[in-house]
Length: 150
Image 1 (tube, rainbow, N blue to C red):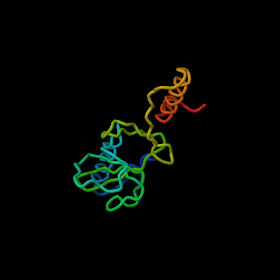
Image 2: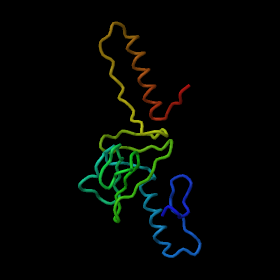
Image 3: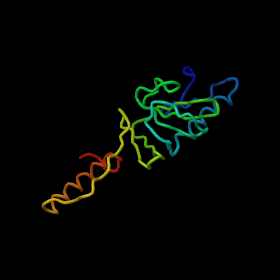
Image 4: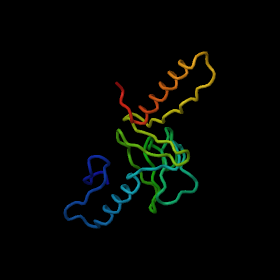
């Protein structure tokens, strides 16, 4: 489908004038939209496809992926009735990982997984603990894309 016209953002296939079997192109676009709108992955990044996958489930492909996922590093792997489909992320895209509820954000070079905010404990003065925790909170909010660096 690489020579077919596609949308600019997610390379969804477009119908062409006088195209035969328009339903194939249309169904492919709907399958990708179904996975990308309010995107959620089961788990990942993973290097190997899961042994059992249900149509509609998605995973994030890790570096060094093998088998049907080889060469798809960083992409979303979408299980469909017809096999695996892959969607390349765009900068600013967010997905939720269902296995742990974490929100991941694509920064243009890779997926950013926000770190956990440490719980203040011990310490000589409460002020230094509070400053450290606030700094960690700011980093996590930036990783989620809720704050911009400034």
